[in-house]
Amino acid sequence: MKLLRLPSFTSSPWTQRLVGVLRVTWLVLTFGFRMGMKSVRAVLGTRRFNMPESFSRELILSVEDFESADPGNQKFDPVQGLLEQLRKLYLALEPHLDECRSLAVCSPNPREGKSTIATNLAILAAHEMGQKVVLVDMNLRTPELARLLGREPRPGVTDIDGEFNCAGLLVETHVPGLELLHAGELIDRPGKLLASGVAGVIKKQLVGRGYLVIFDTSPINTSVDGRLVAAEADGVITVVKLQTTKKTQLATYYQQLKGCRFLGVVCNYDEFWIPNWIYRLL
Image 1 (cartoon, one colour):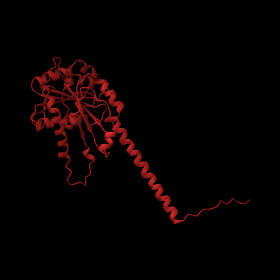
Image 2 (cartoon, helix red, strand yellow):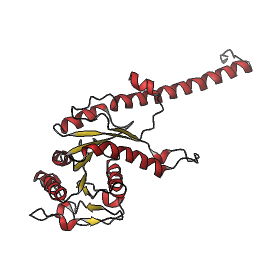
Image 3 (cartoon, one colour):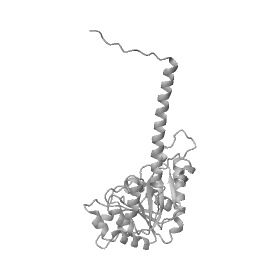
């Protein structure tokens, strides 16, 4: 039995080089297209959303992801860079602070930088701007503020007595002028406690003593807790994470907080390389 021999083709070195160049070009174009579409989708998901009527369009701030910055850049100072961004945020908020003495820092989803923004804003307001500030951890499911400020968990919101007296629960921090009200011991039904109006009572007591109150809340789209706190605050700061927060998630977020006073949006992890003229087209 004879085996069938297939004709063999030999290619010249130039042909092989051309095929290699075409393959590399195809991979580069495919990767670039995918990354470009990802960035465009993220822009469409955050930049083009129709903000509510009460949204202050002067207050939209981009905060870079300083952890991913180029370490070879000797001129880059992440601490000073972050401080400058926070100063811009505070100065944009300042005209509203006479009538908005309690601020709820909210985000649609978990892990969008909400607690970090709230903590650093409180530190800046107390340390540089001379405000008396109380940072209140109203995220009763997954509290973060004690960890961020290097403090051990202590009695807090869930331990407020029947008369809602929170004065004895305030804890001093390493920042002069900044005090912390912990979330307290984890409980099974935090929504029931928040529905009783505890956020409003805390706000009334602390604002009455001349404090600027900053609430850190639970993610709005995951539970009713954050909505109950935001409804009691004088103003809401929205934190979104670029390349992550979707337009549909923002739509749900604003629907959940309908009736709240939106002061502005912090665009966290701003890493886009798309030029401004493309942003305007989108």
